[in-house]
Every structure is written in structure tokens, then in C-alpha cells.
Image 1 (cartoon, one colour):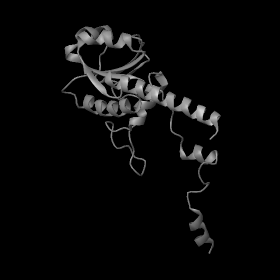
Image 2 (cartoon, helix red, strand yellow):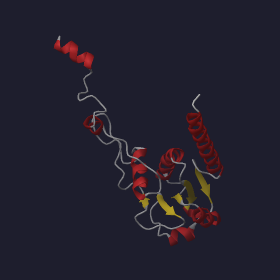
Image 3 (cartoon, one colour):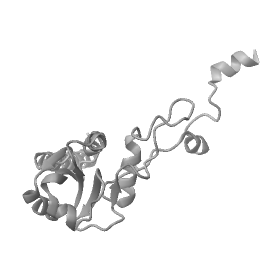
Image 4 (cartoon, helix red, strand yellow):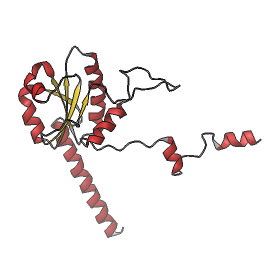
Length: 189
């Protein structure tokens, strides 16, 4: 019944509505998904967007399909950035201008501009996934978070690294021990 609380609530609801409408507009423009474009669409797309990720791929390269899989996951998590892919065979001009020698190559663009440290070339610097013993599964298997973190460091997506168990325990967000309280009671007997 408080008019001030009702006013604050209405302001927040209006803000949420505006954010939802803006998200829907972005989704219609291709945000939140990995969209394939052709060479003629490349410059108009990347120059009008504040942040853009472009995957240069080849249909016959297995690693390019692996990169596509990870980029689709990241695109869905980060609607603040436009994710595109370009067939390198059909865009030789841009491959030459951007000095793309290895596929897959993923490049981050800011209003159409990039520099050499804003790219992921192949799977270099991506730590492989490990099994329950900590052994690497294979060089072609790596967690999506590896690529997501690299894009976050570049600044092309808004990324916050997940806290480790050790960090959570340090700040009292997890119990000090992995043994539950009920198990400790049984052990103490």
C-alpha cells in the first residue's frame, strides 16, 4: 500500500520491459546465435556492430565444426555480441587482408576494427578437457569455458570467470571440508 514502493516497483517493471524489448530486437538481428554470412555481407555487418566475433571456417575441416559447436553455446550465453561465421573458401579477399593462415580462426571485432591479439587461431592456448583422474582427453576436446574466457579477456563478450571450489571456500561460500556435517558426526561416532 506504500505509494513510494509502488512507484519503485513500476520503474523497475518498466526497465525490465525495455530490456526485454531490446533483447528481442537484438535476437531478430541475429544476436544469441551463430549466423553464417557471405563475403558481401562481411563489412556491413561488422562495421555497424559494437562487438562482433567472426569464425572463418572450411566445410571439410573437422576442427571447424568443433569450433562452431562451442561458438553456438557461447553465442546463446552472450547476446551482447554478434557471432558470425564465414566460409574461408568463399571469402578469399578477407582471408588475405586479415592474414588468416590457419583454420579455424576466430576474430573479435570492435566496430569493424581488430588487431592480431584479438583472435583465436586453431585450438592453441585452449586447455584440453580432462577425465576424472586429471588426464587430458584429447587435443580436440576442450571445455567451452576456455574459449569463452579468452573472448572475455579480449573484451568482445562480457565474461566473468566462475569461481573455483578453493576460492568459494576461502570466502566462506562452501564448507571448509568436502565431508558433509552428517558424515563428520558419524565418523566422530
